[in-house]
Length: 293
Length: 278
Image (cartoon, rainbow over all chains, first blue to last red; front, side, top):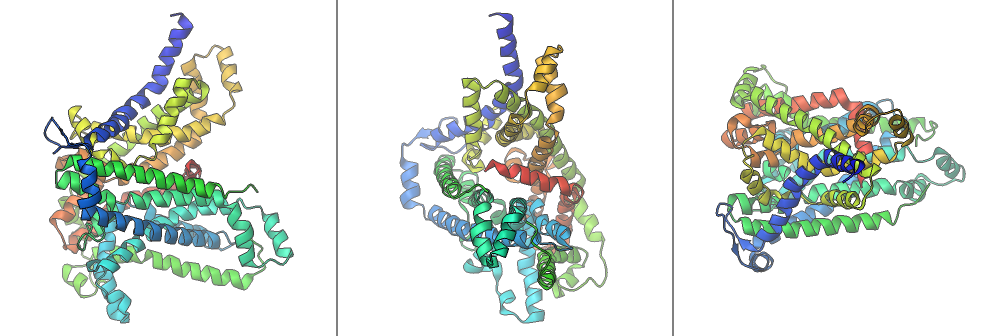
């Protein structure tokens, strides 16, 4: 090997080596191992995992009601949460790009919940639902606040949706704001002069121009809500009666509470395939609607 | 997209409505802070009212039960060390991948990008096995290594996009002047990458500081707890003792809120810059 070549080798190792090493140890190897373990019965302790073929998968598909419930919860939650958080985030951004005197303070306030981790947020809201809402209900007599929020399957679902919106709307708002400020002003003014109504301007000019932001925001919101774990864990622990258990929480419980690691990895593999399919489909769909200004 | 200032009344109405919405947004914080300084009795009778007497001793008790200084220190060390190493190794990797787009590097880069869609739950179970095989369980450095692995894909992706926009001429000039390849990177490219570093650090800080699941799997010893695990452990022990739990929560969120208020400008910019990853 000549000197130039060996110097290139050394550089390659020094520059790319460390990241690749950690990436392989922490993601690639566990991912491969996971594929193997999903075909085994394994309790996490034994060195030898017993090969069971497709048993785990058929068990998950036909005999695992809890996984079905968790999956159905996650799907419902994703649809509702993603749409609601994006509409709310967009509306905040839309009004906070108007020349308001307080807009900087307001942006800060709306973003603030997002810097607090999901776990702590869940505990904070547990208190709000249990004690805070009751206090508001007592003084206002509104039945909305007097429901047993976390004790009922339907209200617990909506409770998590509320917290999710509170947490994520501000983040989505930031992305929408950056996109809205890039909409060329002369286009808006021209439309105004031509007599277009505000709804028309919003639908025919603003929305098509901010589609890249919509792509990003939908992608983020979908992957957050699909992978939701911390919020359910601290807010409801998946209750009442497993009604708010997300897929991520179900996988965790299967492996680390029930000690069925093989079954857990099989679920995790199915979960990965679904997340990959849904997000790539979404990005493809919304990307096709992007236009250039 | 600042629209014209003609609609004065409309602007004022919008302003008032938005302020009201913001106040509504802050209500959970009001409940949290107000009740954290009430006695347990006051807290139960009316949690919406302003405290009659301020019971600051709640904080002292929560401080010692959660072993707050220890948890704060652990969170701090994990976040800072992971961030520094992550920025260093991923900026180096991304730089090399952009400047030497060999087939090997292109494949490697696509692997990093593809890994961004893998949810943590899909690798966590075998990861625990790998981590314990390598004897990295119950160690802060083990946790940091995990963050280097999980953080690398997005950090490399962001740096990769940034380096592509850096003109190569300056580097060539430096090479002609006798700079070694490492000198080119550390003296010329590294300082240029500062804006992207801020973005990467901010995104990774918010993630690592708030992460619960990974540290809970890797760290089991009480003295190694980070803030989210300490909070969770505390809630397991003191369910429904809100006079202790609320001050613990306030202590838990204060550092990150302070960080946010101090770094606000950069955080907002960082998120905008990071959002191109879709």
